[in-house]
Each structure stands twice: as structure tokens, then as C-alpha cells.
Length: 338
Image (cartoon, rainbow, N blue to C red):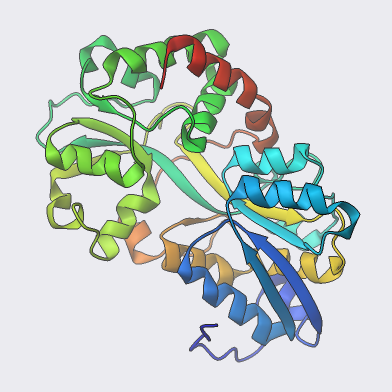
């Protein structure tokens, strides 16, 4: 396991300050697949004396595993990406409610579910990217993307992707089901190609000239500003970006978070770990290591993330978005969004 080069001279901020003498283990089930998260784990281990045992896999596989293990599950914490997966975990009964003054204080209320089972740590903004040589009137809101003037210009991921599902769910919450249906149908009419690939592929589509407008999470673009990404970094000046809906609800945020497992054998260590993820140090590393936005207000962003500029984020409630996911999927099916 990679060891941090940072020597912790004193306790970490927030809850870790009270856990420096703790001992024991923590069994972490994680679908976050980023090598840079290694430092989060090793710093927590060094600060607390708690050993992290990891099982990694796809979110749905981990949730199914926890269900199958039942009361005998060794899982203490589940970490995953996106509101939809957090909702699946909660609905599957594999998480439990907890009380933590640290999390209540540091994590904004809209980024905790109503039962204190799910907590968000880093975030990504889902924003509009446009070819720099495009017409001078690019879309300024998500709803604008469905206007007829952008017919044949827009690239987006498939409806089976969780980023697509939560964006539509937030549109339902902010604008109503009828407006969301009209938007989804308009998007299908405006597609430059059939939905395909990941977020980086949407950005590459602008460079290749296949798309004039794409929607993607901010951290894919910020990563290409920070280091070389094949097919993107060398020509990244061909792309500009727009934080949508700045005069209305604000930019939609994709979330990464987790919660304490329903049958956690090391429950107190699990809570300490979540509290550590809300510390300034961990929040800064989410930003510096993976180009994400910190969840805790006031924490400095990394250089690559700061380059994107300031913006208004949608503060729609996590639980409300999660409740709209079944409706979002039905709309996708009805309008023929592949």
C-alpha cells in the first residue's frame, strides 16, 4: 500500500483530532476506483492506528454482496459515486442511521440524506462544454440544450448512466415532470450522434468536430488541465465551458459519498472514518488528487479545479433527487433516449 509522504504533525482537523489514539480495524467496501484515494486511507491509518481492509468492486455488486452477507457482513463503510447508487444502497437496507456532530456541522444539510444514512464528501459539477469557435449564443441552462436551434449539435451519455439519471431527476425536482419530459425529448431530437462513451468521450467529441456541445462532469475536464489526457489535453483550448442555470437553480452537482454499513462490526471506527473524510485535509486531497470540489464550505480548491472559476451550485436536497430516479428512468424510456 502506498504510504503518504506527508508527516502528520499533530491531529487532523475535525473528528480525527479526537481519534489519534484509536486502534482496531475498518472494513471498507468501495466502488471509488481512483488510485489517488490511497493517500486518504494511509493518512487515516497513520493518524488513528486503525487498519483499513478494503474490498473494491462495482457499486451494485458491493450492495448485492452486503445484502447476501446480511447480519454476518464484515462491511463497516460503503463508499460509492452518485446519488442514484447511494439511494440504491439505502433502499437495499445495507446502511444505518448515525449521529455525528462533526458531520452535521461540516457537511451541508442538503448533502446528507434525511435519515443520516448517506453523506457526501467530494462533488463534481455537471456542466456544459462548447466548441470555442461555436456560435456566440451557446446554451446557458440545461433546459436550453433542448431548444431546436441546437438540433444535431449535442452529445451526451446514455440514459443507463447514473450521471444522466440524476441530472434528469434534478430537473424533475426543479422544474416539474412535464418540463423534464419536454427536455428529454428535445435532447433526443438534438443529438449529434447516438449516446455513447463516457464523459471524456463527450469532450473528445468536441475536439473531433462530431459535437458542438457536450455535457460532462467538471473533474474530467479539470484532470485534462492538470495532466495529459490522450485525445483531450493537447487541443483543450478548442473547448470552453459554461456553468448552467446561474440565474436560477445553479449547476447540477454529481456526488460521491457513503455511509456506515447496517451491520458494521466496527461501528465507531466507521463513524470516525466518515468524520475524517469531512476534515480539511481529506477534503483538500479529494480536490488535489482527483480534481473534485470539496463538500465542506471554505476548503481551498486545487489549482486545476480553481481554474474553472466560481459558480452557483444547485443545492437541491439529496433525498428529493433520489426519490425522482424511477420517474426519470420512465421518461428516458418513453422518449427513446438510448
